[in-house]
Length: 216
Length: 257
Image 1 (cartoon, helix red, strand yellow):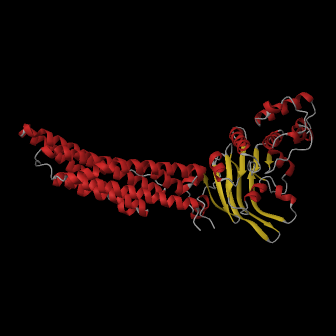
Image 2: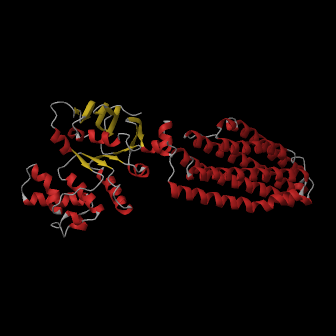
Protein backbone atom coordinates (compact mmCIF):
# COMPACT_ATOMS: atom_id res chain seq x y z
CA UNK A 1 0.00 0.00 0.00
CA UNK A 2 1.29 3.40 -0.93
CA UNK A 3 1.81 5.73 2.02
CA UNK A 4 -0.16 8.91 2.38
CA UNK A 5 3.03 10.90 1.89
CA UNK A 6 3.86 9.20 -1.40
CA UNK A 7 0.32 9.68 -2.67
CA UNK A 8 0.53 13.38 -1.84
CA UNK A 9 3.97 13.62 -3.43
CA UNK A 10 2.68 12.04 -6.65
CA UNK A 11 -0.27 14.41 -6.72
CA UNK A 12 2.08 17.34 -6.23
CA UNK A 13 4.19 16.06 -9.11
CA UNK A 14 1.07 16.07 -11.30
CA UNK A 15 0.42 19.69 -10.29
CA UNK A 16 3.95 20.61 -11.33
CA UNK A 17 3.44 18.95 -14.72
CA UNK A 18 0.13 20.78 -15.07
CA UNK A 19 1.89 24.07 -14.39
CA UNK A 20 4.59 23.13 -16.91
CA UNK A 21 1.98 22.38 -19.57
CA UNK A 22 0.25 25.68 -18.87
CA UNK A 23 3.38 27.82 -19.25
CA UNK A 24 4.29 25.89 -22.41
CA UNK A 25 0.88 26.63 -23.85
CA UNK A 26 1.28 30.30 -22.91
CA UNK A 27 4.68 30.51 -24.59
CA UNK A 28 3.44 28.70 -27.68
CA UNK A 29 0.33 30.83 -28.07
CA UNK A 30 2.22 34.07 -27.37
CA UNK A 31 4.63 33.40 -30.24
CA UNK A 32 1.76 32.43 -32.54
CA UNK A 33 -0.05 35.61 -31.51
CA UNK A 34 3.06 37.59 -32.37
CA UNK A 35 3.56 35.85 -35.71
CA UNK A 36 -0.09 36.11 -36.81
CA UNK A 37 -0.97 39.36 -35.06
CA UNK A 38 -3.64 37.35 -33.24
CA UNK A 39 -4.74 39.60 -30.38
CA UNK A 40 -7.28 37.10 -29.12
CA UNK A 41 -4.50 34.59 -28.54
CA UNK A 42 -2.41 37.32 -26.87
CA UNK A 43 -5.30 38.11 -24.51
CA UNK A 44 -5.68 34.42 -23.66
CA UNK A 45 -2.04 34.33 -22.59
CA UNK A 46 -2.29 37.58 -20.62
CA UNK A 47 -5.26 36.36 -18.60
CA UNK A 48 -3.51 33.05 -17.78
CA UNK A 49 -0.81 34.80 -15.75
CA UNK A 50 -2.96 34.66 -12.62
CA UNK A 51 -3.34 30.91 -12.99
CA UNK A 52 0.44 30.49 -13.12
CA UNK A 53 0.83 32.52 -9.93
CA UNK A 54 -1.92 30.49 -8.27
CA UNK A 55 -0.24 27.20 -9.14
CA UNK A 56 3.16 28.55 -8.07
CA UNK A 57 1.87 29.40 -4.57
CA UNK A 58 -0.21 26.26 -4.28
CA UNK A 59 2.70 23.97 -5.17
CA UNK A 60 5.13 25.83 -2.95
CA UNK A 61 2.76 25.64 0.03
CA UNK A 62 2.15 21.95 -0.53
CA UNK A 63 5.87 21.18 -0.90
CA UNK A 64 6.61 23.02 2.35
CA UNK A 65 3.73 21.22 4.06
CA UNK A 66 5.06 17.82 2.99
CA UNK A 67 8.56 18.69 4.17
CA UNK A 68 7.31 19.93 7.53
CA UNK A 69 4.98 17.03 8.20
CA UNK A 70 6.90 14.08 6.80
CA UNK A 71 10.58 15.08 6.89
CA UNK A 72 11.31 13.32 3.61
CA UNK A 73 14.67 11.77 2.85
CA UNK A 74 16.83 10.89 -0.13
CA UNK A 75 15.05 10.83 -3.49
CA UNK A 76 11.79 12.09 -1.96
CA UNK A 77 13.61 15.12 -0.57
CA UNK A 78 15.44 15.59 -3.86
CA UNK A 79 12.11 15.56 -5.68
CA UNK A 80 10.65 18.22 -3.36
CA UNK A 81 13.77 20.37 -3.63
CA UNK A 82 13.58 20.02 -7.42
CA UNK A 83 9.90 20.95 -7.42
CA UNK A 84 10.62 24.16 -5.51
CA UNK A 85 13.22 25.14 -8.11
CA UNK A 86 11.17 23.94 -11.10
CA UNK A 87 8.18 26.11 -10.26
CA UNK A 88 10.38 29.19 -10.10
CA UNK A 89 11.80 28.47 -13.55
CA UNK A 90 8.37 27.61 -14.93
CA UNK A 91 6.85 30.76 -13.48
CA UNK A 92 9.53 32.73 -15.36
CA UNK A 93 8.70 30.94 -18.61
CA UNK A 94 5.03 31.81 -18.10
CA UNK A 95 6.01 35.41 -17.40
CA UNK A 96 8.00 35.59 -20.65
CA UNK A 97 4.97 34.26 -22.53
CA UNK A 98 2.92 36.96 -20.82
CA UNK A 99 5.49 39.62 -21.79
CA UNK A 100 5.52 38.45 -25.42
CA UNK A 101 1.71 38.62 -25.48
CA UNK A 102 1.84 42.15 -24.07
CA UNK A 103 4.46 43.10 -26.66
CA UNK A 104 2.22 41.66 -29.37
CA UNK A 105 -0.50 44.07 -28.26
CA UNK A 106 1.94 46.97 -28.34
CA UNK A 107 3.19 45.94 -31.78
CA UNK A 108 -0.30 46.10 -33.21
CA UNK A 109 0.27 49.63 -34.48
CA UNK A 110 3.51 48.72 -36.30
CA UNK A 111 4.19 46.78 -39.42
CA UNK A 112 6.32 43.67 -38.98
CA UNK A 113 9.91 43.98 -40.07
CA UNK A 114 12.41 41.54 -41.52
CA UNK A 115 13.78 40.12 -38.23
CA UNK A 116 10.38 38.98 -37.01
CA UNK A 117 10.46 35.50 -38.66
CA UNK A 118 13.53 34.61 -36.59
CA UNK A 119 11.43 34.78 -33.42
CA UNK A 120 9.08 31.86 -34.29
CA UNK A 121 12.27 30.07 -35.40
CA UNK A 122 13.67 30.56 -31.87
CA UNK A 123 10.36 29.42 -30.41
CA UNK A 124 10.55 26.23 -32.48
CA UNK A 125 13.74 25.39 -30.62
CA UNK A 126 12.94 26.68 -27.15
CA UNK A 127 9.42 25.32 -26.72
CA UNK A 128 10.56 21.69 -27.21
CA UNK A 129 13.44 22.41 -24.82
CA UNK A 130 11.05 23.48 -22.07
CA UNK A 131 8.67 20.64 -22.94
CA UNK A 132 11.45 18.05 -22.70
CA UNK A 133 12.60 19.50 -19.38
CA UNK A 134 9.05 19.18 -18.00
CA UNK A 135 8.60 15.70 -19.47
CA UNK A 136 11.97 14.55 -18.12
CA UNK A 137 10.72 15.65 -14.70
CA UNK A 138 7.41 13.87 -15.16
CA UNK A 139 8.92 10.63 -16.44
CA UNK A 140 12.19 10.86 -14.50
CA UNK A 141 13.86 10.35 -17.87
CA UNK A 142 17.03 12.36 -18.26
CA UNK A 143 17.69 11.05 -21.78
CA UNK A 144 15.19 13.63 -23.04
CA UNK A 145 17.45 16.49 -22.02
CA UNK A 146 20.77 14.98 -23.03
CA UNK A 147 21.28 17.38 -25.95
CA UNK A 148 20.04 20.60 -24.34
CA UNK A 149 23.45 22.26 -24.55
CA UNK A 150 23.51 21.97 -28.36
CA UNK A 151 19.93 23.14 -28.63
CA UNK A 152 20.67 26.10 -26.41
CA UNK A 153 23.71 26.96 -28.52
CA UNK A 154 21.52 27.04 -31.63
CA UNK A 155 19.07 29.28 -29.81
CA UNK A 156 21.82 31.69 -28.80
CA UNK A 157 23.09 31.81 -32.39
CA UNK A 158 19.68 32.88 -33.71
CA UNK A 159 19.38 35.45 -30.94
CA UNK A 160 22.71 36.97 -31.99
CA UNK A 161 21.48 37.04 -35.56
CA UNK A 162 18.27 38.82 -34.48
CA UNK A 163 20.27 41.48 -32.68
CA UNK A 164 22.71 42.02 -35.55
CA UNK A 165 19.97 42.19 -38.16
CA UNK A 166 17.78 44.44 -36.02
CA UNK A 167 20.62 46.86 -35.43
CA UNK A 168 21.33 47.06 -39.13
CA UNK A 169 17.65 47.47 -39.90
CA UNK A 170 17.32 50.27 -37.36
CA UNK A 171 20.33 52.05 -38.85
CA UNK A 172 18.83 51.77 -42.30
CA UNK A 173 15.29 52.62 -41.16
CA UNK A 174 15.43 55.04 -38.21
CA UNK A 175 11.68 55.46 -38.36
CA UNK A 176 11.22 51.71 -37.65
CA UNK A 177 13.10 51.55 -34.38
CA UNK A 178 10.17 50.76 -32.00
CA UNK A 179 9.19 47.36 -33.46
CA UNK A 180 12.84 46.34 -33.66
CA UNK A 181 13.34 47.15 -29.99
CA UNK A 182 10.38 44.90 -29.22
CA UNK A 183 11.86 42.12 -31.35
CA UNK A 184 15.21 42.35 -29.61
CA UNK A 185 13.47 42.22 -26.25
CA UNK A 186 11.37 39.23 -27.29
CA UNK A 187 14.47 37.41 -28.53
CA UNK A 188 15.90 37.97 -25.07
CA UNK A 189 12.78 36.45 -23.48
CA UNK A 190 13.05 33.38 -25.68
CA UNK A 191 16.74 33.03 -24.99
CA UNK A 192 16.05 33.20 -21.23
CA UNK A 193 13.39 30.49 -21.60
CA UNK A 194 16.14 28.30 -23.04
CA UNK A 195 18.33 29.02 -20.04
CA UNK A 196 15.47 28.10 -17.71
CA UNK A 197 14.92 24.83 -19.59
CA UNK A 198 18.61 24.05 -19.00
CA UNK A 199 18.33 24.88 -15.29
CA UNK A 200 15.23 22.69 -15.00
CA UNK A 201 17.09 19.85 -16.66
CA UNK A 202 20.01 20.23 -14.24
CA UNK A 203 17.61 19.89 -11.33
CA UNK A 204 15.91 16.86 -12.87
CA UNK A 205 19.29 15.16 -13.24
CA UNK A 206 19.92 15.89 -9.56
CA UNK A 207 16.49 14.56 -8.64
CA UNK A 208 16.94 11.34 -10.59
CA UNK A 209 20.60 10.58 -9.90
CA UNK A 210 21.65 12.70 -6.92
CA UNK A 211 24.44 14.10 -9.11
CA UNK A 212 24.97 17.76 -9.83
CA UNK A 213 25.71 18.69 -13.41
CA UNK A 214 26.00 21.98 -15.22
CA UNK A 215 24.42 22.16 -18.63
CA UNK A 216 25.74 25.59 -19.54
CA UNK B 1 31.42 1.53 1.58
CA UNK B 2 34.02 3.09 3.85
CA UNK B 3 35.85 0.44 5.83
CA UNK B 4 39.50 1.24 5.46
CA UNK B 5 41.37 2.10 8.64
CA UNK B 6 42.00 5.81 8.37
CA UNK B 7 43.95 8.10 10.68
CA UNK B 8 40.89 9.18 12.60
CA UNK B 9 39.50 5.67 13.05
CA UNK B 10 39.24 5.02 16.77
CA UNK B 11 37.39 1.73 16.55
CA UNK B 12 37.70 -0.58 13.59
CA UNK B 13 35.11 -3.35 13.36
CA UNK B 14 36.28 -6.12 11.07
CA UNK B 15 34.44 -9.17 9.81
CA UNK B 16 32.19 -9.36 12.83
CA UNK B 17 29.82 -12.33 13.06
CA UNK B 18 27.63 -12.93 16.10
CA UNK B 19 25.33 -15.76 17.08
CA UNK B 20 22.76 -16.10 19.85
CA UNK B 21 22.79 -19.90 20.17
CA UNK B 22 22.11 -21.22 16.67
CA UNK B 23 20.70 -18.00 15.41
CA UNK B 24 23.08 -15.64 13.65
CA UNK B 25 22.44 -11.98 14.46
CA UNK B 26 25.35 -10.24 12.73
CA UNK B 27 26.88 -11.15 9.39
CA UNK B 28 30.40 -10.07 8.48
CA UNK B 29 30.02 -6.49 9.67
CA UNK B 30 32.95 -4.18 8.98
CA UNK B 31 32.93 -0.47 9.67
CA UNK B 32 35.04 2.24 11.27
CA UNK B 33 34.08 4.47 14.16
CA UNK B 34 35.75 7.83 13.68
CA UNK B 35 37.27 9.71 16.59
CA UNK B 36 35.32 12.74 17.88
CA UNK B 37 32.48 12.05 15.50
CA UNK B 38 28.95 10.82 16.01
CA UNK B 39 28.19 7.58 14.23
CA UNK B 40 24.53 6.57 13.98
CA UNK B 41 23.24 3.06 13.41
CA UNK B 42 19.79 2.87 11.85
CA UNK B 43 17.60 0.05 10.61
CA UNK B 44 14.32 -1.70 11.31
CA UNK B 45 13.63 -3.50 14.60
CA UNK B 46 15.62 -6.68 14.91
CA UNK B 47 18.21 -5.69 12.31
CA UNK B 48 21.09 -6.07 14.76
CA UNK B 49 21.96 -2.44 15.42
CA UNK B 50 21.72 -2.71 19.22
CA UNK B 51 23.56 -6.02 19.11
CA UNK B 52 26.33 -4.38 17.10
CA UNK B 53 26.46 -1.46 19.54
CA UNK B 54 26.75 -3.82 22.48
CA UNK B 55 29.67 -5.65 20.92
CA UNK B 56 31.69 -2.43 21.07
CA UNK B 57 32.07 -2.62 24.84
CA UNK B 58 31.53 -6.37 25.14
CA UNK B 59 28.10 -6.04 26.72
CA UNK B 60 27.05 -9.20 24.89
CA UNK B 61 29.50 -11.17 27.03
CA UNK B 62 26.85 -11.37 29.73
CA UNK B 63 24.61 -13.41 27.42
CA UNK B 64 25.64 -17.07 27.78
CA UNK B 65 24.53 -18.21 24.36
CA UNK B 66 26.31 -15.37 22.55
CA UNK B 67 29.26 -16.28 20.34
CA UNK B 68 31.36 -13.81 18.41
CA UNK B 69 33.86 -14.05 15.56
CA UNK B 70 35.83 -11.22 14.09
CA UNK B 71 37.77 -8.28 15.49
CA UNK B 72 36.97 -4.97 17.08
CA UNK B 73 40.15 -2.99 17.20
CA UNK B 74 40.04 -0.15 19.67
CA UNK B 75 43.09 2.10 19.58
CA UNK B 76 44.74 -0.71 17.61
CA UNK B 77 44.03 -3.49 20.13
CA UNK B 78 41.46 -6.20 19.58
CA UNK B 79 38.99 -5.99 22.46
CA UNK B 80 38.06 -9.64 21.84
CA UNK B 81 41.64 -10.82 22.29
CA UNK B 82 41.93 -13.24 25.28
CA UNK B 83 44.33 -10.91 27.09
CA UNK B 84 41.99 -7.96 26.93
CA UNK B 85 40.71 -6.60 30.25
CA UNK B 86 36.94 -6.28 29.87
CA UNK B 87 36.58 -3.91 32.81
CA UNK B 88 39.03 -1.44 31.34
CA UNK B 89 37.23 -1.64 27.98
CA UNK B 90 33.94 -0.76 29.63
CA UNK B 91 35.58 2.04 31.61
CA UNK B 92 36.85 3.59 28.37
CA UNK B 93 33.65 2.83 26.42
CA UNK B 94 30.59 3.89 28.38
CA UNK B 95 26.97 3.22 27.60
CA UNK B 96 23.64 5.01 27.81
CA UNK B 97 20.46 2.96 27.56
CA UNK B 98 17.01 3.51 26.15
CA UNK B 99 15.35 3.99 29.50
CA UNK B 100 17.09 6.28 31.99
CA UNK B 101 18.44 4.05 34.75
CA UNK B 102 19.77 6.19 37.60
CA UNK B 103 20.79 4.31 40.73
CA UNK B 104 18.26 4.71 43.57
CA UNK B 105 20.53 7.07 45.45
CA UNK B 106 21.33 10.78 45.48
CA UNK B 107 22.31 12.73 42.39
CA UNK B 108 25.78 13.18 43.89
CA UNK B 109 26.22 9.49 44.65
CA UNK B 110 25.14 8.50 41.16
CA UNK B 111 28.06 10.44 39.72
CA UNK B 112 30.64 9.39 42.31
CA UNK B 113 29.74 5.70 42.20
CA UNK B 114 32.13 4.88 39.36
CA UNK B 115 35.06 7.05 40.45
CA UNK B 116 34.86 5.56 43.96
CA UNK B 117 35.03 2.03 42.57
CA UNK B 118 38.08 3.11 40.62
CA UNK B 119 39.73 4.39 43.81
CA UNK B 120 38.96 8.10 43.99
CA UNK B 121 38.47 8.94 47.67
CA UNK B 122 39.18 12.65 48.21
CA UNK B 123 36.07 14.72 48.77
CA UNK B 124 37.43 17.69 46.78
CA UNK B 125 38.25 15.45 43.85
CA UNK B 126 34.80 13.82 43.94
CA UNK B 127 33.16 17.26 44.18
CA UNK B 128 35.13 18.40 41.17
CA UNK B 129 34.11 15.32 39.17
CA UNK B 130 30.42 15.81 40.07
CA UNK B 131 30.43 19.45 39.01
CA UNK B 132 32.46 18.81 35.89
CA UNK B 133 30.35 15.87 34.69
CA UNK B 134 27.04 17.57 35.47
CA UNK B 135 28.21 20.65 33.58
CA UNK B 136 29.25 18.55 30.60
CA UNK B 137 25.84 16.88 30.67
CA UNK B 138 24.20 20.35 30.85
CA UNK B 139 22.46 19.41 34.09
CA UNK B 140 24.50 21.36 36.65
CA UNK B 141 22.38 24.52 36.68
CA UNK B 142 19.23 22.49 37.23
CA UNK B 143 20.49 20.35 40.13
CA UNK B 144 23.43 22.16 41.77
CA UNK B 145 21.34 23.15 44.79
CA UNK B 146 19.93 19.69 45.40
CA UNK B 147 22.76 17.26 44.83
CA UNK B 148 21.74 15.21 47.83
CA UNK B 149 18.19 14.72 46.55
CA UNK B 150 17.24 11.35 45.15
CA UNK B 151 17.98 10.95 41.44
CA UNK B 152 14.64 9.21 41.13
CA UNK B 153 12.89 12.55 41.66
CA UNK B 154 14.31 14.02 38.45
CA UNK B 155 12.29 14.19 35.23
CA UNK B 156 12.93 11.56 32.54
CA UNK B 157 15.07 13.94 30.48
CA UNK B 158 17.06 15.00 33.55
CA UNK B 159 17.54 11.35 34.55
CA UNK B 160 18.91 10.59 31.11
CA UNK B 161 21.33 13.51 31.30
CA UNK B 162 22.32 12.29 34.78
CA UNK B 163 23.08 8.88 33.25
CA UNK B 164 25.25 10.62 30.67
CA UNK B 165 27.01 12.56 33.45
CA UNK B 166 27.50 9.27 35.30
CA UNK B 167 28.99 7.70 32.19
CA UNK B 168 31.39 10.64 31.90
CA UNK B 169 32.51 10.33 35.53
CA UNK B 170 35.03 7.59 34.78
CA UNK B 171 36.61 9.56 31.90
CA UNK B 172 35.58 7.38 28.98
CA UNK B 173 36.77 7.96 25.44
CA UNK B 174 33.69 6.55 23.72
CA UNK B 175 29.99 6.80 24.60
CA UNK B 176 27.56 4.27 23.21
CA UNK B 177 23.93 5.36 23.19
CA UNK B 178 21.18 2.83 22.65
CA UNK B 179 18.08 4.80 21.63
CA UNK B 180 18.75 7.36 24.35
CA UNK B 181 15.74 9.55 23.60
CA UNK B 182 13.04 7.04 22.78
CA UNK B 183 11.50 7.41 26.24
CA UNK B 184 11.74 11.22 26.27
CA UNK B 185 9.48 14.05 25.17
CA UNK B 186 10.54 16.29 22.24
CA UNK B 187 12.08 19.00 24.44
CA UNK B 188 14.12 16.55 26.49
CA UNK B 189 15.07 14.85 23.20
CA UNK B 190 16.32 18.13 21.75
CA UNK B 191 18.45 18.68 24.87
CA UNK B 192 20.05 15.25 24.54
CA UNK B 193 20.67 15.88 20.83
CA UNK B 194 22.34 19.22 21.58
CA UNK B 195 24.32 17.54 24.30
CA UNK B 196 25.53 14.82 21.92
CA UNK B 197 26.83 17.56 19.61
CA UNK B 198 28.79 19.10 22.47
CA UNK B 199 30.06 15.76 23.71
CA UNK B 200 31.73 14.89 20.44
CA UNK B 201 34.30 17.61 21.01
CA UNK B 202 35.76 15.43 23.77
CA UNK B 203 34.28 12.01 23.14
CA UNK B 204 33.44 9.67 20.32
CA UNK B 205 29.75 8.81 20.16
CA UNK B 206 27.97 5.85 18.62
CA UNK B 207 24.20 6.07 18.73
CA UNK B 208 21.49 3.59 17.84
CA UNK B 209 18.26 5.29 16.91
CA UNK B 210 14.91 4.47 15.40
CA UNK B 211 14.45 8.11 14.57
CA UNK B 212 15.97 8.76 11.16
CA UNK B 213 15.55 12.50 11.48
CA UNK B 214 17.55 12.30 14.67
CA UNK B 215 20.30 10.34 12.92
CA UNK B 216 20.35 12.83 10.07
CA UNK B 217 20.37 15.80 12.46
CA UNK B 218 23.12 14.81 14.82
CA UNK B 219 25.42 12.24 13.25
CA UNK B 220 28.46 12.60 11.02
CA UNK B 221 28.42 9.00 9.81
CA UNK B 222 25.53 6.61 9.44
CA UNK B 223 25.35 2.86 9.03
CA UNK B 224 22.16 1.27 7.75
CA UNK B 225 21.60 -2.30 8.92
CA UNK B 226 19.16 -4.88 7.70
CA UNK B 227 18.79 -8.49 8.85
CA UNK B 228 22.14 -8.52 10.60
CA UNK B 229 24.07 -7.04 7.73
CA UNK B 230 25.54 -3.59 7.36
CA UNK B 231 23.97 -2.60 4.05
CA UNK B 232 25.56 0.81 3.71
CA UNK B 233 27.90 2.98 5.69
CA UNK B 234 28.97 6.49 4.83
CA UNK B 235 28.81 10.15 5.62
CA UNK B 236 25.38 11.06 6.96
CA UNK B 237 24.76 13.72 4.32
CA UNK B 238 25.28 11.15 1.59
CA UNK B 239 23.23 8.41 3.23
CA UNK B 240 20.22 10.67 3.65
CA UNK B 241 20.36 12.57 0.37
CA UNK B 242 21.81 10.12 -2.12
CA UNK B 243 22.29 6.62 -0.73
CA UNK B 244 24.00 4.19 -3.07
CA UNK B 245 22.02 1.09 -2.09
CA UNK B 246 18.42 0.60 -3.20
CA UNK B 247 17.60 -1.02 0.15
CA UNK B 248 18.82 2.04 2.05
CA UNK B 249 16.84 4.31 -0.27
CA UNK B 250 13.69 2.29 0.32
CA UNK B 251 14.13 2.25 4.07
CA UNK B 252 14.81 5.93 4.58
CA UNK B 253 12.05 7.00 2.21
CA UNK B 254 9.54 4.76 3.97
CA UNK B 255 8.98 2.43 1.01
CA UNK B 256 9.91 -0.59 3.04
CA UNK B 257 8.06 -3.87 3.40
